[in-house]
Length: 212
Image (cartoon, rainbow, N blue to C red):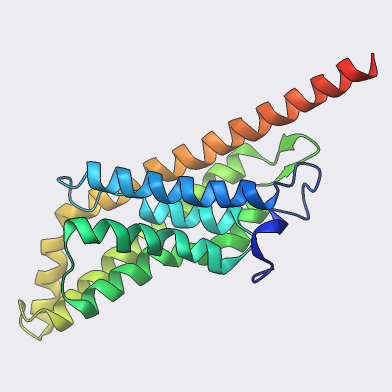
């Protein structure tokens, strides 16, 4: 499925009828990137509260190409960091990697969040999968980025005590990471679900009017 470019659309096997054209996915790409940059800059004073991981999860679900999906969070980070400022390269690369990692959940999200015959799959199952992916993404980001900070920044002692101290110092920021991943993730997927449902209902109504 990766490498098929813009034209395959999201969940092409489940709902070919409403498959978006290439320009629609291109528009979605630039829209998601612009939204991510704007929101990240707007909330710059709230530590670790950003939509990037949630956008990566949604991009993995939506775009047929993994390359395009990965480009969404990475482009957001690179462009917004030109304003916010770059920092220690190994740590920055670790942050970028962890924010792009939710794209890997594309297969799971496509199984849980399906649109078929004009209806969505189980709401509880979809919500549970989304919340689970958001929580796992936040936890992994916290564990890996703080470990990288302990390793490369030279702030903490290179001992178990120093590592635990590093994690303890990062705990106050974890709640913002979790709030951002869950809040923005729910907003994206719920908004998309509503939009798809409205589009299908409108097309059916139009088809009925034409038939009459």
